[in-house]
Image 1: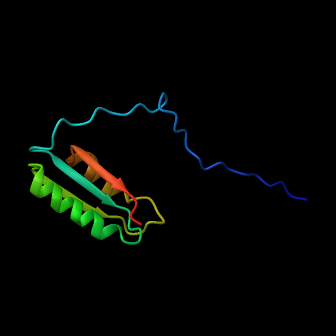
Image 2: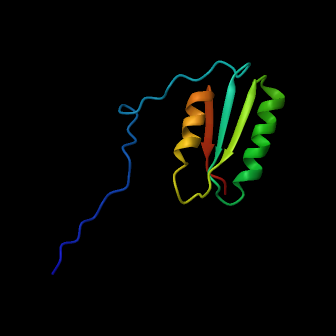
Image 3: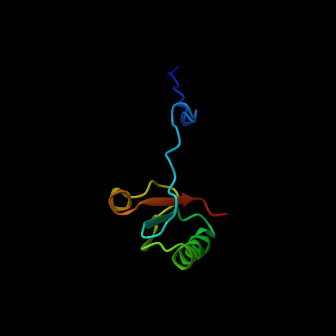
Length: 95
């Protein structure tokens, strides 16, 4: 009989191994990225968040990007754009 290997997909989430980065004092003049993962109903939520950030925070720009599929990681080009252009990025799941 063949050998069966099981992989554990869980990540290490201990805060001592991944300390939070300091937050921004405010968003005035900052570029804020929003990465929509494409889950059901996430787009209207992230579109509203982008509108609120633009109207209420003084952010210089909001980059709203949507992954092609919630089943896969964001394309490298999308991640690179966020890394190179954004001072802060919001990402999450819609439900």
